[in-house]
Amino acid sequence: MSKRITLPKYSVGVGDRFAHQARAQLSACIRAGDAGVEVAPVWNKSNREHTIIGTDPNQTRAAADAAVKALGWDEPYFVDADHITLKTVERFLEPCNFFTLDVAEEIGKPAQPSEVDAFLSQHPELIGEVRIPRIAEPFKTDTTLVRGVANKFLAAVKDAGKIYRLLVERKGEGTFVPEISMDETDAPQTPVELLIILAAIADEKIPIQTIAPKFTGRFNKGVDYLGDVAQFTKEFEEDLAAIDFAIKHYGLPENLKLSVHSGSDKFSIYRPIHEAMVKFGAGVHVKTAGTTWLEEIIGLAEAGGNGLEIAKEVYREAYAHAEELCKPYTTVIDIDYAKLPAPAVVDTWTSEQFTSALRHDQRNAAYNPSLRQLLHVGFKVAAKMGDRYLDALDANEEIVARNVTTNLFERHIRPIFIGC
Image (tube, rainbow, N blue to C red; front, side, top):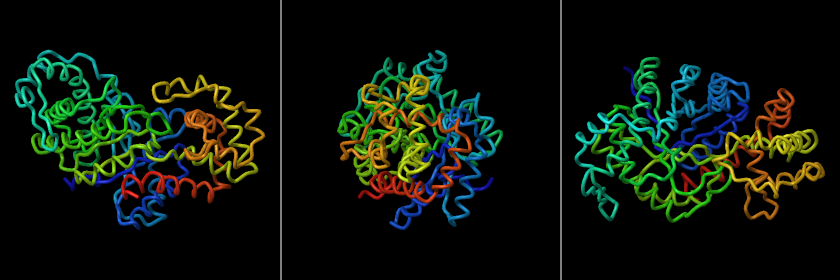
């Protein structure tokens, strides 16, 4: 077998709804390299997004490959089958080399009692006083606690094992990066709970390279983190410690790292993430960083003329169909509908007024997070425009690309990975 595909220490997930911004996104990673930090791009697009837009994972791969060729990128890069299940994996098998195993439907389903008993027998070290290096106080557990955590997550881990083994059968062992998403649950996992989950993953022989746990606070789409930053920092650092412990004790891959499913633009936790990585010498996968689709709309609005008219039309249609557009995202958006301007008002806006409301600049009094979240989930409107929207992107490529690159590098890559 050839050398196992390995995700580098730092990686950034980038979505590209319409497969037009791969070069602009890669340019941000090149700027990171120029600043002395390698950040691997991971182009991710979920089955739901492909279905809504009417695209195929092969188009995401083609766009990534074309960008890499055009810009002469010779470092690792990846195409992520984002949140796939056994039901949706087929179309992603050929083009993808990164698979986010989505087991949300299985979290909380009772595991087989015999499997829980076997797990408890195999892991006596998790019962009693659990000391994790670099966490000050030991954790006190008992059989009831460990049994409860195993019962909540074991079925999900077993499901991940089924998906992983299918991937190995169809693609070959070591030919892709596996990630497991455990963030769609009711409460943040404690370090001991994460350790129990990692032990179960090791038992299932899934060589995950990233894991996405649930963190405290709200990670709404396209807007800043809402929650206790100090508590997030504590959880993040303790999770890093738990991962390091699991690598050493359970034989998980040495490059295993945290994946933060950020929903983009979680600016207030970027510094704590960077400082924790430096403190622990750890890597991180941030997914998704930079809302490329919104930067396209900002670029079109900034261009004026037909671009601004299309941006206004997208808002008008999103406003009219807000309930339908928001329904799939109710747990990750928080829109104050009273603060959404009427389309008739937006129709009178200048380019500056539109971009000031949409661009994520909290220093600007005109910034409107409710408008931003509505447009974030409104990409279906642009998809229905078809070539009108894509032609507008092509006609305004330079200004759109500049917004995409600047946003990804300055607002995300720089504070997370470079630290300034």
